[in-house]
Length: 595
Image (tube, rainbow, N blue to C red; front, side, top):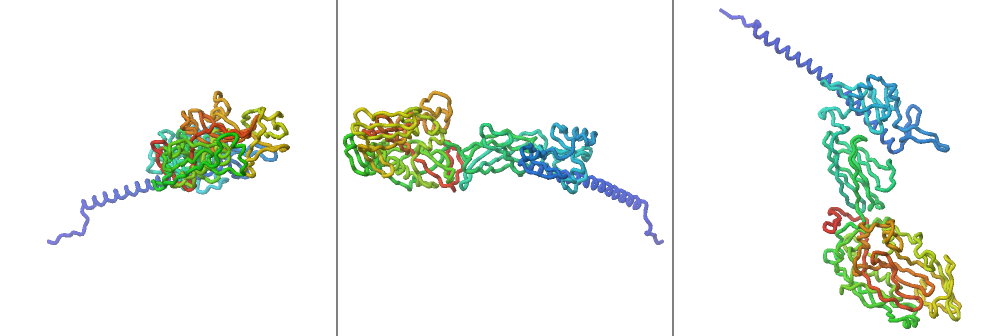
C-alpha cells in the first residue's frame, strides 16, 4: 500500500512557528537598539557641534577677539567705554539669562550634570533663537553654556539604558571618546628642555590623568613679579601627553610658569621651568677632543720700571704687550668646565664662561703693568681668550668685561652715584690746565677747583683719538671724564652691608662670579677706566676680586707706576645660534651636552 508524504506533520509545524517567533523577536530588538543608537548618535552629534562652537567662542574670549551676534558686537572679556570708544559686552555674556529657561529643566540639568548652573557661576541659556543667531546648523535642542569654562550642558539631556546624560563627559567611554571629564582624578606632568637649531624649547611630557581625558591645553607665562593673572598664553587643544613651548632667544634664560588644563575645571599645579639659566654647566671642550693645542704668548711690550723712565719715554707709541713680561697660555690648560653666562639677544649666541680662571702654562696669574698694560691690556686679554673659542659649536671667545657683570647684577653706573659729590664722581668732567708753576683743575658737576698736587708738575695722559701718550705743556689744557666705580653685587653700592638690590650672596650668579676665597680666583675684566682726582689721574682696568667689582690702577698721570697686580683670565665662549643642547642636568657632575 502506497504512503502519502505531501502533508505537514505536527512536529514540523511547531518547529516552524518557533523559528518565526525567534525571528520576530530579533527584529523587534534590533529595531529598538537602532532607535536607541540613533537617538544617542543625535545627542552626541549635537553636543559635539555645540562644544566645537563653544571652543571657538572661548578662543575669542581669551584672546580678546570680537564676534557679532544679532547686531551686537561682543569683544573678549568685555571692553569698558573710554573717550571715543563705546563699551562692548564680553563673549561670556552671549545668550539669555537663566530666568528665561524652563526652571524645571534647569533644576534637573543642574542635578543630573553635577554642575551648579547659576548666573553667578557664569552660565547662559542658549535656546534656538541664540543658536540660529550664532549660525549653528544641525542642532535642535537647548543648552546651558559657560564660555569661560568651555562647558556645554544639555537642557533636555538624553536617557540611555536607564541613565540620563547631560554632558559629553558623562558618557561611557565606549560610546564617546571623552574630551571633557569629571573634576576628580590626579593630574601631573613633567618638563624637559633643550636648545635645537638655536631655538629654545620646553617640552611638557608624561601628562598623566586617571580619568578618560585625551585632549589637553597648556597655559604658560613668564615668571615675573607683579604678573597679571590674565597674562597666560593658552595653547589650542592637543591630543596625547606631550607638548612643546617654543622659547625665543630673549627669554632663553627666563623662568616660565606652566600648567596643564582641561577647560577651567581640571587644572594641574603650576610648575616652573626654564631652558637654561645662568650658571648651568655645558660640556664645551675647547680642545675639540684633544685636536686643538693652540698657545698664545702675551708679549712684554714696552717696560718701564719707575716714574722717571715712564716720564722720559717720548715715543709716540708703546710697543704692544702687557708691560710686564712674556706670558704664555695654552688651550690645553684645564678650566674645570664651562657655565652659562648669558645670551646675546642680537646674535642669539649662548655665552659660556670658564668655571675657573685661566692661568699661564707656568700655572701663574696674568700680570698687567703701567702705560703699556693700560693701552694694550684689553687686547691682550681678548687675544689670550681667543684660543679657547675653537671647540665644537663655538664662534669664538673673548674676555669677560665689566659690562657683562653689570648686566647680570643690574648695576647701572649712570644712576648708581658712585663717589657722589667727589671730583671723581662717575661721569664728572674735569679740565686740567698747565700753568707756569703748577697745574690747576676745574670740575663740571661739583664746581670743585684747585691746584693739582703739591709738587708734581708733570701731567702724562693717554690721547685716545691718536692712540699715543702725551705730556701736558704750559698754556694748554685737557678735559677728562671720570668713568671709574666699584661696587658689591648684592647692594650695588660701595658697602656690602645693606639691602640686597642686586644678586643675593647665596645665588648661583654670585657663586659663579664672586665667591672667590683667595686671590688665585680673582680675575681681570677687559674694560678700561679713567679716574679724575685733584692730585693726578688714574688709568687702569677693572677686575673682580674679594667679592666686588673694583678698579685696578696701572698708571698715574704724574708718571707713577702702580704695584703690578696679577689676576686670572676668564674667557667667554660664544656658541653659534644653530647649536643643539640637550641631555644632562646642567650640574658640574652632569653637564648639558652639545649635540
